Length: 194
Figure 1 (tube, rainbow, N blue to C red):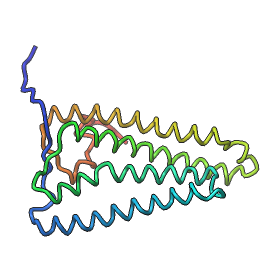
Figure 2 (figure 1 turned 135 degrees about the vertical axis):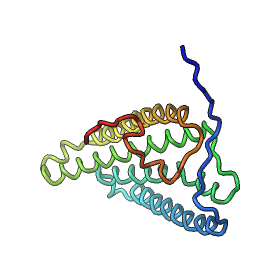
Figure 3 (figure 1 turned 45 degrees about the vertical axis):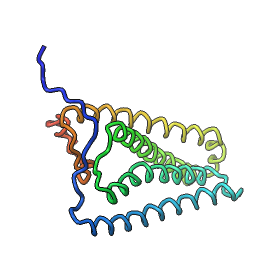
Figure 4 (figure 1 turned 90 degrees about the horizontal axis):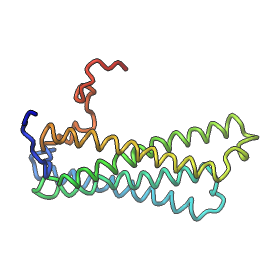
């Protein structure tokens, strides 16, 4: 059995977005405004759809679900990002990083599946308008939303497994600017054809 260098990663260091403190303060204000606007807009949609009884239809139920997903999706990484812009500590614990990755992919995957459900709902409304009410019963659209959340959960479990493997292989430095746009060759798929 070979004995390699096995290092336990306890925290990750974010590579700097910028070296200028004033620019970081400016970026903090810009990202905070965008974040608050996103949250308030989605909360407004959720409250409107919930309070207005005429909007209790499959389309608006799915829109409310999408808004809830967007609120959670925005809140997974942005608060920590804003905190790192203001402080000198540019690190995140291993467990904190794993939680962020899990929820980021969980909600992101559920969001993508939810968009597919919304497209299916609109397809039925346009292509089969007379059968729409029979096909899209309450149980059906609730089941489709639950399935989208389950799909997001399965997706996030796969991502956590891949990332934990990468963290043990590559060490504790994360380039936050390129982290979301990895190439397939990073995972050993050199001959993968799309």
